[in-house]
Image 1 (cartoon, rainbow, N blue to C red):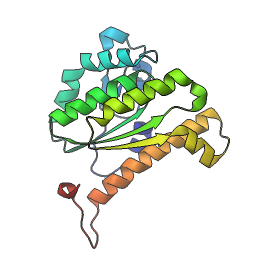
Image 2: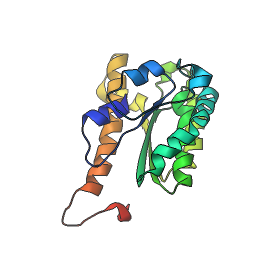
Image 3: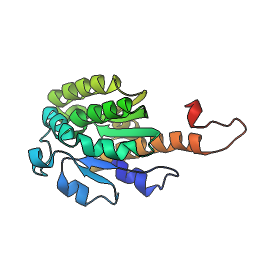
Image 4: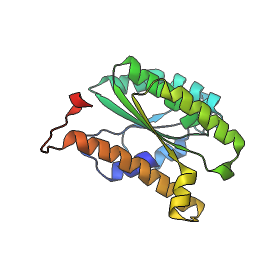
Length: 190
């Protein structure tokens, strides 16, 4: 959802790829570059909130992801909701591919709401720990803090706010790189 929101903002100089184990979510995405993670393993049904399935599914699709990233990619943003299966298990694998290819990588992830349960919180912590070892920069956005800041939102509204924060963070970083000012910052400075 965050990637779809970024795509709709038409961020200049950015190519988007959406990766998911859930075939239906991919079909509903407007992003033309789509990778179904683990089509044989998950049969397009998602990772069932199991990070190990997310990891295995991403490894199944490793070569396809690598092929896409090898073509002229200088910087990658990896966005994920941590705590479930696909993002938690898959994001570190994709980040490792980027690191191995020498791609500057920024992780922008959210942590689960407290009401999603302790198991999901622990899975998120473990996924973030793994992701941290492969990215150059990691922004972790607490869904609980967002909810506190914006008041008592309905669940869908809260997730929309989180997606918007992820998209805004990525847009701000790319705007700094793509714009010219009194002090010019380009990709080599990042």
